[in-house]
Length: 183
Image (cartoon, rainbow, N blue to C red; front, side, top):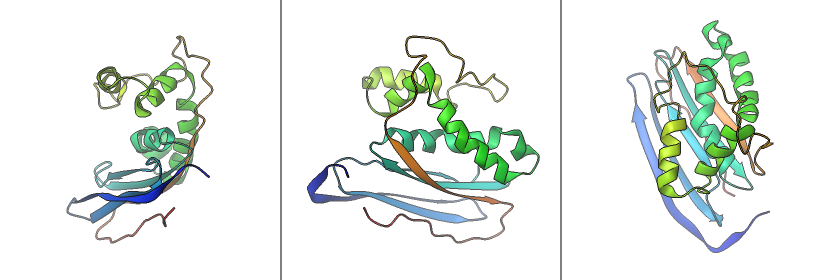
């Protein structure tokens, strides 16, 4: 079940935004849990015509939910099915891709950074170097599964996450509510 606090942490993190086609708002609160295990992603402009929103409910830790919030939307875009207009297949393949990406040396390193297992300065450098926004081009070879090193045999994290995503292609005007009921 996890470790619970004697009183809930009720501070909330809230964010809102819009892109001319839709507006959104989100809020998260740790509650009774000893640590915040959940994450979210809000990309109203995933590409020129698509919006992506995700809620990731961590189970047994925060690293998988944070990993998915950082990478799932990018993998949806990268899959050839997305370019072909098959959003369902692209999303399905992106979910499977999360498991593949978390294995091996690069996955171990990224999960260590997200889980605060590497000191903050090193983590900032590692996070920038290995972040998809850290200079990696769209045409670069995806080498997550092939990188060799001291943790190449890493089989994945011990925590997990459920995910609920909403993807809106070609929208004109939209209001949507997506939330997790209290833990």
